[in-house]
Length: 163
Image 1 (cartoon, one colour):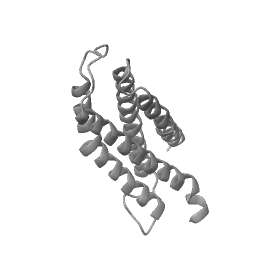
Image 2: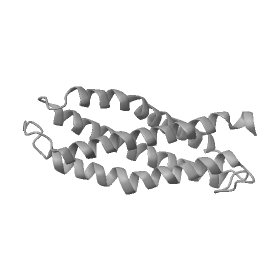
Image 3: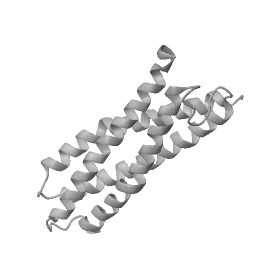
Image 4: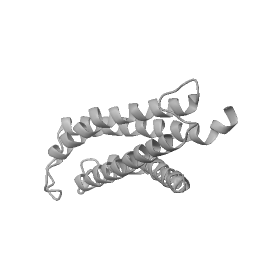
């Protein structure tokens, strides 16, 4: 139990990183939209994909691992126990939903978009309509993940007020 506060601190840091991704998402999205069909558009899309995938991997794994450790170490917590800690069970269900969205939709769509934009980011060839569909799908999914992360964050910081 002596390193429990360190685990909580790491959990909070990962949550803050994930929230920062949610905050930066609209800026990256608007930059990409402003540069549609312009020189450098592919570079912005590549930046968006790299930023969101790397930060997403680090934060989701960090939250998942530290969350599992905290639940395992604290005798008052459990996995998916609505009767004991409804706020925690809700957070766990949301986290499972986030992981499903990441694995089933975001990762395959990102791979598809990376294939469309290709390796040569300086190439000025236009992006296909399918590429734009994948990009806009990623924008929607990223917003959905951000909202779910925000809900989880709010559950974490307000649960002491609602029992």
